[in-house]
Length: 150
Image 1 (cartoon, rainbow, N blue to C red):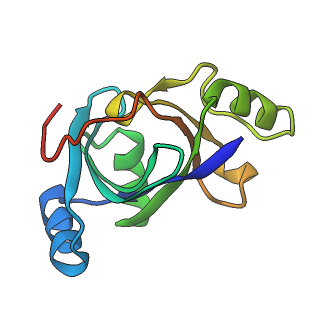
Image 2 (cartoon, rainbow, N blue to C red):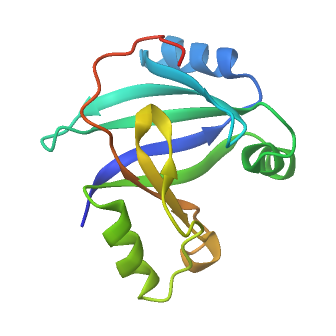
């Protein structure tokens, strides 16, 4: 069962400048940063709030590290902006399978490792009214990783 909005993914061409905009404009601080080589992105997670299930809601800022990455291609085609929405779940495997059973294409056969050690998969945007949708099972509740590059 989906429990919350885990994060909104925002594609950007300059991660540092985008982080500074969200910091200066809204007061959001970086909770975690990392480079995901498999997905070809450098990212910053800005924590918005905690939730009663021990999770949190974030903005995920994504800068491609290579033009041929999914985010790089998307950015070249669409420009900066909202890339995807992610819903939190305690069971990404079970929820992905249940959603697949309803006729929605799940993009990965097996969930992959995402931000902060989470397990993730994506749903095809053509089956979700034009919205790339991610399902996320968080790793154990993270300690504050403020500005820690992993």
